[in-house]
Image (cartoon, rainbow, N blue to C red; front, side, top):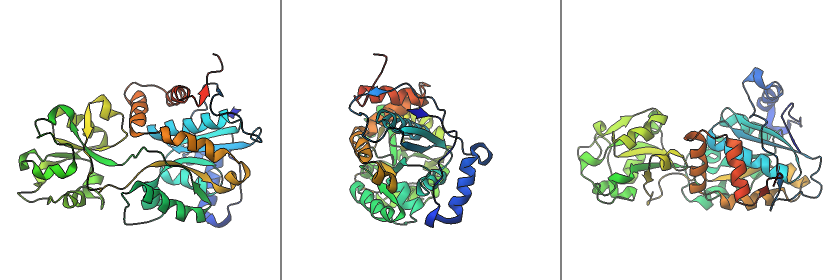
Length: 341
């Protein structure tokens, strides 16, 4: 059974301290602290490959997510999966920012969150050296977070990391470029970029990326400063598509890549950190609900870059509701059924 989040269940704060205690107060008065859960709407769910787990009836399962499109989609997938498995699901997705969702999970006020390995490694765990290898990144966050009371489940193939994209129709004009290392083979005048201010200055952003690919920022034979335009994040995609630059900074699962026919260049020297998404569980919940982790382990392999780009596009470009998009995908994959059929 699905129920809307009229309250958040309370658990002991334990070793996570005063900050989580403050968050608990915020969570119990969602609107007063600016934490707004997602709409309680999800379509009715029938069993598919996900069937009710023994012992799940009447057991609570609280799902949380951040408040951007991809996270809303993943949150709804988790809600639908939990509902099909027979849990009493509370939907606490659509929270603003990464830290509130992380703290809800650490405190046990949420049971599951789809999270990105790179975000955990660099933001939550305070690591400074990024890991490009996807399996190594997942194992690194798993090994640390298990001591924090969190268990990282099976990672998905989807890797929502930074990338550079080019107009597909311009690839031939640019010598058939497909990889970042081929930027160095282009004439200087063709090395033009659209990036956001944060990427332009961050330690894993524009300057170190260029250096990693043997290009010097500001050099006449590298990438002159005049070749780099600074844009708001949302404007980069259209600016790249319009030809304001040849290469735009993008995220690899953004639906606008397909909508605008932009092609992602291959990061052939593995510069960008891995940002694979994986379900992260409050470990105590896994210990009391055998079978929960396997449900998400079956879903993860189906979540590819292409799948998320398609779902993100339906929401951001076509205006569809995230719950409906998630529902249709879950049905198409056979995880759930429409009880009206």
